[in-house]
Image (tube, rainbow, N blue to C red):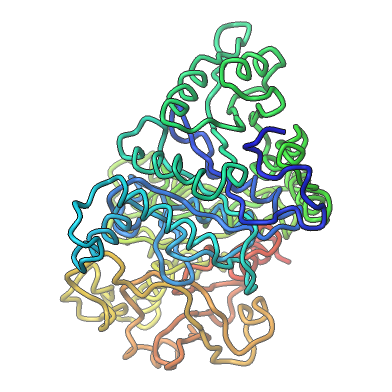
Length: 561
């Protein structure tokens, strides 16, 4: 055992963490290697050992949060209970660890600099010149210590361990202050309380599949030059690392061969914690990962997903169909629900604009319609902007008329409402004021309390209650007992309250509303196998062994259960 390991064997087995422990996960060579999954997987192992775990994601960008960033730039915006708009990796943490994080669990350069500048304006630094070192680095360390002590598992008990993921790659200019802060942090809390995990790439080259170690050697050399010596290497590769590669990495990167781990390609990401455990990570960390039975349940789930054969096809109708990260939580929620109904999930990505009349490419249009008509269920996720809106309305119409199970999320609820107003109520040209401010029949309107001048953090955000308006309906049955449900929101527009009575009289019932009884949160169409829309985003609270009820209902209806 080296001094830098997370937990020494000398600790008492019934209480292996005598003080807060930190695992810092960094990355090198290139982005997209799976630092978030690695960090989440380590958290799973610690939780399986009976420890309370929390997580922090450090994003070096200057934005205050991810709320104003394009999905093309950054993937989905993950919304937290307190309304924080965060990096999608926080979704990985919550799903893997079954915890609920807050906005402060996502630390950005914008947040840190704002905090330091605000302190300077108050005179907190007593006239000193404010600099990156020590003021920014001190603020980072204080932030980490403060957030790490906050419960995230629903209890009131302080976490035993905190997983910290540093975004970007070692060598990025933007990451420099954080590398320095973490270098200092190891001495602030005690080197024995910090384990540094570095995720790197081992490419496989040539006809014989030679595993190349040089990229990892260089990134570790750079990290050590900045004052941080990794305790554990996690190496991404297409195939398992051979013994020669492990020994070479150990020799050149100043780690034990036992601390070099291979995260090669696997059938599904739920195998990653199991892969690390099988290679001895729990021994390196000094914990018994089999002590609670949680890992056995995790293993059963991962293997169950591998054995699913009978397929279920869901048509995802959106406008970011070439970028799956834009809908990451929706995809995971569909997968959770598919596992619950014992089906292998197949997603057909339907570009909404290709469904529209007059689309210029006949082949693309034919392909989109073929996928829509061949699907067992249709899902229209959230989004912003008018591109593809008419295609989404067409998808909702097709589902309603042909009794195809439908789930509309946020914008998906709104476009289905627009379609109903046009084609059932006869309100020709009905639309949302988001797309046509002068529309005669406004089925969807801008919420009066929302700012029209500032974009960041001004939407209706975070966990809010939805109160049931009826005693019996499909979606209420799925949620189970209770007079209300709490789900996370992210929207600026709502169904026009002036049309609710008329819409409901025609059979589209708003079975869930906000506390005032005015704002529509859930609709369900009478006489349809499953035609449900939710104004909130249920995907953010779905878990592998506890699928989100609206998604579960869609998959149950699609399998005719």
